Length: 462
Ligand code: MYA
Image (cartoon, rainbow, N blue to C red; front, top):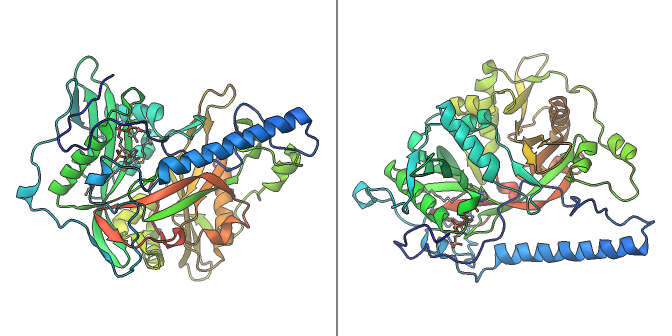
């Protein structure tokens, strides 16, 4: 198929395929290929040869990923036209913390939507309409982020998408689709923004959080993504917002922070069966299951599910905790109620209530993001919990997160994932998390500031 989009700024000419989309995180020692195992002491020479070959391929693949993603000299025909720092631009001065382009006046903002190529049309998507939500679900379920080996693909549930896209103050015009203009007018591409206040190195900045950029597999590499990004930018600018925050697995100009995923097995047998992880050398399945076994129920006195009556205290607890990070959201009570209060199958949150005073002293939360296990005869779904916002004041963070793991296991999660953001490093090792093979890059649009370390990041995007 030919190139799809017009070239109004010279940024949308076709070029070589990009590196693969950012993968759902998988452990670094994920089983590669079809059932091959890592070297064990009793390997035959044939098995050793295969193992070496496999390791070589893995090394080559790792270096390819680095070259594709991190080559600072590679031109970015679209991103080089955008108000973002260049990849080779080192910003070390912590005093630099400001917009790149000044805010535009309404009259300087393009009033009409960017042109769609023949056969396609913009579509404002009403996510409160069940049938539209189903279409979005299906597009993402079939075309959104996969791991490098195409073994897993994110499977955001409809209830999850409703949650993610309708926080307080959301704007319907930031839920943007592209449809085929004829026939069944199916949904072919998608991008979303939700307004949020972020605090960047102490400065409060009105932002949109951009997410769910997706182009149907049949329309890939035709420069549709830049048009989606430009159109959402135009709409967001018209609403008086000029900064954005987003995350991606790929390296683009230019990450403000680079984070890693870590994984804690909850159902190691299933994870091994589906190739998400593999049996460690010299380990039997029985020993592996024992290694990851957790108590039946949470152990901290006063640990219970968060309730609406806890929102006020949780807001105080969370907002004051987040202040210590260089990039964090600023959340009010309505937002804490939206984002943190439990929603079945979407987000779970727990508090510790002081048994004597009744005060809420701790908070932990995780969201449910399954992945489709592509083409597996026994398992269709990998059930994953993702660490969200956690604050420990009465117990060590590690103890709190242990109870979070127990709760995740008790709602049938197979794995618990956490980024090395905030203070998560404090519990990853002791709670038996393993490092994943994916990086998650954090980006700011139209903002220039010094890079930060993963542990300076106090923001989790869905
Ligand atoms: S991250 C999740 C992204 N989605 C997926 O990975 C799902 C599977 N993949 C796809 O659907 C497609 O491969 C996508 C690219 C849509 C990703 N973020 O159309 P193309 C650049 C930004 O020919 P396609 C998320 O949702 C690429 O470098 N740019 O490519 C956050 C190249 O530009 P340049 C990306 O493969 C999204 C150009 O696109 C990404 O058919 C944040 C090629 O376009 C990416 N993940 O489609 C978006 N991947 O030539 C930015 C590739 O310059 C928001 N590209 O290198 C910015 C703020 C906007 C609002 C501002 C308001 C003030």
